[in-house]
Image (cartoon, rainbow, N blue to C red):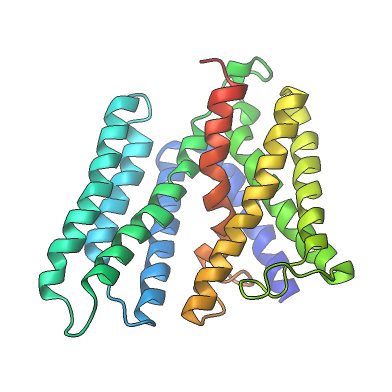
Length: 283
């Protein structure tokens, strides 16, 4: 398993760095594909509990959110309007589709799962594209349109979250004893959480220094990422335990499904984007 994870990382990381630098369609298409796979993983898991979300309606609204995020980035009013319309559309289509629901299934559960999938997967995942639009040159630390300017914000978040995840697992296995969430994640320990938080802060400070960002901003961001990343993992574990599954999928060798790999990022990317906009970059 570890060998598979390492091989996957050795292939995926260089590809990711290239796509982040190129941006545009080069990033939009694979990011959207990953989002749609994650959405299907969620909807497929719902069916294990006898819940029947509307795949087509949810997928169409999810595509609208991603497209608005990418192509209306320089028109925030239009972007917000289209994204709001897509979420509202998921509600309307989810309810209308219940006229033809399988006999005995729940109207609320079916339509609720459709909408929740759009928000939890598509809306939160769209901040992957939003962070790519964050220009760190605006903070005056790096040259405009260079590699750090184009990729720095997103890489900072991803690096911090994945360091937190790895450190939490290692510390938890080595010296973890106190398990505060036994019914949600039996292997999660306070010691592991503390180690993950520390790793996220250190990674943010170290990598953020190469971006010439303010130390106070980096410290605050590292704490936010270290805490929220673990909540994202716990929430994913809570959903999987409810559904009685080990992984959402197996599309990423050694890592499971898209939702298994991006669970923490779904929680951290929106808040990190807001943090950059409020505290790091000039308004």
